[in-house]
Image (cartoon, rainbow, N blue to C red):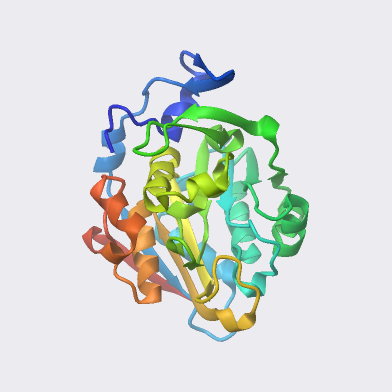
Length: 315
């Protein structure tokens, strides 16, 4: 990835504080903003990787989520008072939580509560679903998590999409779900599962649900597409839900026979390291998964073995 030409979400968000730019492209408005935040500072910052493990019978998923964040310094390390926080779960399919096609709603609810306790002004749940959004919100438990916590559940619609200059190796201009761009803090909250095209869907691939456009076009050269999206969105932190893992017939599944209970959470500020660690849950090495290898090669992050600050917590 050529850093001189790539545009990230962190650069885009500064539109409220710096010059707005636009150009015409086929009648659409393509927005981009100048670099404000140093990418090098993010690269040089110490990185962490936390494994959260539920070891006791009947353990609390919420307690495990809390302890996992505590090991990384607590949610206040990522959320400041008055922040608008966007949480991007994977709730693309109208599947019940026990089928492991979507992010566990207990994990989602715990993360929302932690953000609110850290002083977030507003927490938004955002995903561009595949099945109908209203049905997905109801069946996956995301709607109940929003109701229980007072978080905003953002319904995807064309009026919230805007063509953005990404400058990726494959994706140059693409419609982006704007609430994701406008977040002060962005938390990636995917579920770990197998995928028929990319092999796995973990953290980096979760950003396909943050854009519009034709999904079949995104599935061409899918590994580079995933990395282009991950370069653009660059979340503050990624928490991979591996409490229940779909090991067959992904990404939608539909049968309990596809699911293995692993009772794991993986938290990192390095998206490549998070996915690399999660890949090992499937007995795969990171360099054997296309998008993880490309992400590492193109400077998005490092394999988990290269991160010195690694912790494990258990409940």
